[in-house]
Amino acid sequence: MRAQDRPPHAEFTGRTQPYRRELLAHCYRMLGSLDDAEDLVQETYLRAWRSYADFEERSSMRTWLYRIATNACLTALTRRGRRVLPSGLDAASENPYAAPSAADGDVDWLGPLPDSLITAESDDPATLAATRDSLRLALIGALQHLSGRQRAVLLLREVLNFSAAEVAELLDTSPAAVKSTLQRARAHLGEIATTASGPARPTTSQAHALLAEYISAFENSDAAALEKILHRDAVIEMPPSRTWFSGKRTCGAFLAAQAVGAPGDWRMLPTTANSQPAAAAYHRDADGAYVAFGIAVLTTTDDAITGISVFEDPDLVRHCGFDAVLADG
Image (cartoon, rainbow, N blue to C red; front, side, top):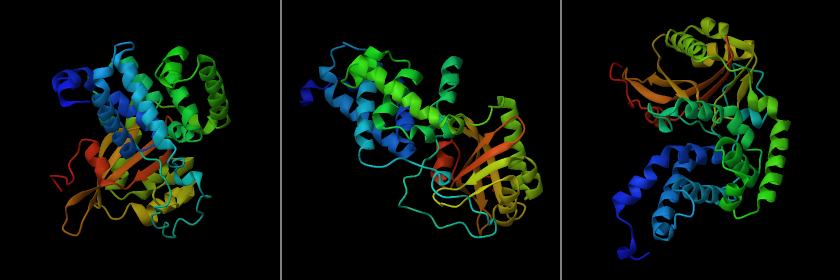
């Protein structure tokens, strides 16, 4: 596009920016990685800017952007394998006292998505409910078992509610092919439905109460209190380490021996990621300052924690809207 043909920046921004948050959620569902999703959203907007002069209003701006984003994601998926969590690779460790394995950089790891990046206080409650149901870690992990095209069709039809005809146009295929692909995607996802659906979802107040107990136990180095709120089949995993633990006793022993430390070692702030309760964690350094460590995403029932997924990445704390160092540390 020649410089003189480019649209006014304010016009382009005004028409496309309202969709940035939902496009980030879509790219994350497709890719299972916040970093990859952010890159693909940037690429989507760059492609849209370059071709904006050719946009003929034959579809809505939203549909046009989803076409660009989805096809960019499908191209990206051809260059790498599916993303996983440790529980999808090896058997659980039976020794809670052995040091977890070193970080494995050869694996494409599934990552979390802080809710603050994709939701706003002004969002419609119905929209928020749909977003929550489609972003849980277990479901994002299950989607990784689908082909890129199956993933795209399933998300466009059943999460974003595009019609079969609209999806066919987005993906340059036929409505019949879309229906066939959707059936295969549903069948494949149904094979792992138990894992994808997870336990019954608690109310928000119940989830927040468990998160508060989790934070209090960690900050007070109370391993017994932590074990008390673990489900009998609880799982702890800590990518990029391949080591993970399963079962209340093993998980409790690991937390006591290798995680909680001494009273005051940790400070945590409540947050949400993947529409699940999460703790933004800070660890006390040698100078006594509390420095961002990462986030722990909890999966819960009404009265117990069934999963703790720990992601050691200080940038995730920032993405949750917090500072790199606690001011009162």
